[in-house]
Amino acid sequence: MRKPLVAGNWKMHGSRQAAKTLLESIKQGAVGISDIDIAVFPSFVHLQQAQELLAKTSITWGAQNLYVGESGAFTGEVSGPMLVDYGCQYVLIGHSERRHVFKEDLALVAAKLKSACDVKLKPVLCLGETLEQRKSDQTEQIIAEQLESAIDTVGIKSLQNMVLAYEPVWAIGTGLTATPEQAQAVHSYIRKLLAKQEVALANTMRILYGGSVKADNAAGLFAMPDIDGALVGGASLEAKSFLGICEAAVKEFKEGLLS
Ligand code: 13P
Image 1 (cartoon, rainbow, N blue to C red):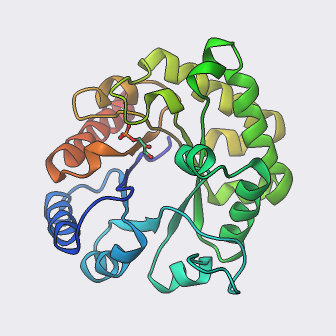
Image 2 (cartoon, rainbow, N blue to C red; image 1 turned 180 degrees about the vertical axis):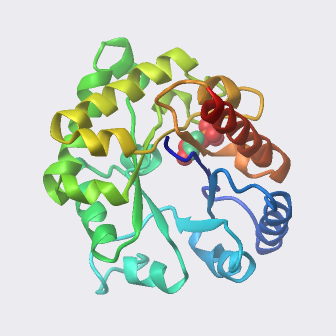
């Protein structure tokens, strides 16, 4: 059985003080939660606080982005080794806001993925279609293109160290969550794509769902056989709602172990 991961993507939110309060509250609230993995993705400037406050806890942290390579004349960018220095275990790659707002194409996403793998950061590779693509029945094609471009660049074996996140663009920050059945259909498709290349990897790969996940809709999503946790945006900015999602994952995981 795959161990669920609940991850909070804080995006470009929070002051230094707000980040401290949120980290402390999550740390306190997560004491005793050991059945699932929990990770937070603060902005770059709050990573040091995450490192200071979360060291010696089971909560891990990561960055929301990186740039290709180890160092160089790339004003304003942050490299993989810099993130490793701040104790990051994970990095988000190919988030829809990076793909759509910042126009990162398949080649750049793949290059970033490779840079993350090169320094042993665990990429959380985000995949997802826009509303127009869904309406024109292109969801599977888009997901396949995004996943295959990644596999072609880093090789199927590198995916062992990754997490995938299905985040339909139309469900992000809109309050429009995919239904558990809609999400399950895409998760199961992703797993089938992986299984074509390596069955063992397909069985162990954690595939998170992201897009308006809240404490009150998480249980329905986690009950689906191919949904292994969540990548949470808005609801991760408040400890109570984020921990509520973590608790839903714990409950589902324990019930799964019993069944
Ligand atoms: P929301 O949960 O705010 O919809 O954001 C989802 C997301 O983009 C997580 O990476």
